[in-house]
Length: 263
Image (cartoon, rainbow, N blue to C red; front, side, top):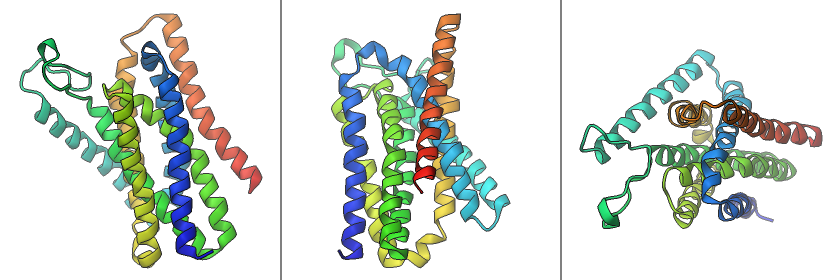
């Protein structure tokens, strides 16, 4: 099989499997489950950021101080992006841009939550880098490419489930969430094909794009999603939230351990 064909197939297969799994969860979920399951999404996002992306970024970066500065800059950039979303959608002081708001009597379109937009942007960065990593692995060795593609698919599934839940929580419909995830996943194919033709130039970008992806996940989790959990301070609700966050982190850790054993 030609290397470029393998890269394209691996990128497409990863997108299809991860979105199919996330879509299955989304379409089976009841509306009142979504705020609860957001706790799992927080754990999955933090798990991916701290257990997968940041260690990989620091390993690939020649300058750890520069990588730390990139992550810090990324958090600032997403703060500015959030402000721009607020300015775009809010025309009164009482606006709550992170909650879905509809015009009176349902005559106008909904104003969607900023966390959904931001996680889509961050996931697009992440998927683009995944494409570069798949291409780099296949260009090094075909078997390594297959193993790398499987690893990326495995860690994408819980992350895409988390992204789906965040989009639903932000006010997007299930079909809209699918379309946004499809568009975001297309970045994997773009990254893979570009890396095949210009790998030397793109490889130097990988650690810093990873850093920006991690920044978006940390910012959305800590600034947008966790504050919403404090609206339910009851002991049983807190225990449920902590358990689901731990489950989200644990699912990422388990995939990491299993892949390490297989390797």
